[in-house]
Image 1 (tube, rainbow, N blue to C red):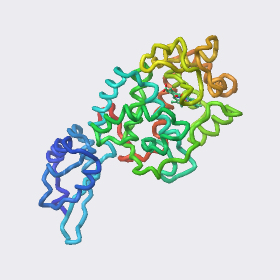
Image 2: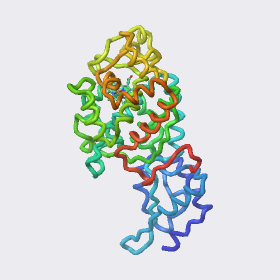
Image 3: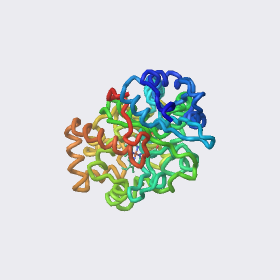
Image 4: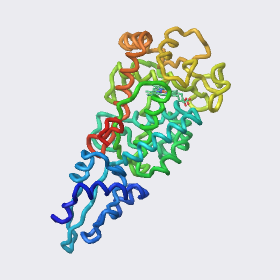
Length: 360
Ligand code: HEM
């Protein structure tokens, strides 16, 4: 046992360089039972760890997480247990997403994809994945077919080539990475994201239909509270997160809401058409709150659940503040978005990891 455990820090450091070549997280698991004699560095197929392992912190984590097991024969084996997603692949995927955004202007639909994966969370259910949330279940057809998700198959199609290129990134992480990068690239605040979300593995693990909010319920304020409180979020977060509608358009052929085309959407960019909430619907700022407050332009959309943000007294206090002060909106939005992105997620490592704090 001592033999298998005695990986030196230099051997651990080179462990990752072989990992870059390996195709998938599942391959890593399948190939993880290694006899001591086969325990060469190249055979440690820890695809979900960093390929360069630059920091001691990460090395120590990997060492801590290496499990020694005994085979029936009594020989010792080593199973490197790795993060749900490979940090280096996540970083590269982020660069590819930025390129995709430059070429296709798909920021809004990627934000919506991330939100619809995480927004099924029910804080009253403890078990994963029954509790819903950011677990990649939205990649399955059965969930994509939920009425609330109309059109999101297009977002999945855009991301699939990136998923194929970086197989050691989970869908759950990819969806949230794409959403946060889209907000940031559109000029919004930096989102304090963490990663390491585990994916559900089969369509039977998808949440039931009906967890996401309706845009035109009989009592919009009560409905928003029912839905967002179920996710463990509060009034401030409801208002801040609604501010994501500063991006994008509603399309009647998808959601049933909005005009087919307006003066702001007739020329795209991207596929023309739809009804935007703001004039510059690819720029993340606080104009959503200003425009709903003023309601001067028929070509700008106000859903019943948007209007109520200036009608309900508790919501209104936040909405007024965000209309006045973009900095306050950005700060609250960034925190609420990060919280939303973590809902229901099972993290591996448990505490998740950041791509930006220098530890990886
Ligand atoms: C408060 C309750 C919410 C309701 C009722 C709602 C409803 C809707 C509807 C009806 C659409 C139009 C979809 C289409 O026709 O393609 C839409 C689009 C969008 N939603 Fe929401 N939403 C809500 C909250 C959120 C949140 C919390 C976020 C993100 C944090 C978000 C982000 C977006 C984005 C970015 C779009 C534009 C998508 C595109 O242009 O393709 N929404 N939403």
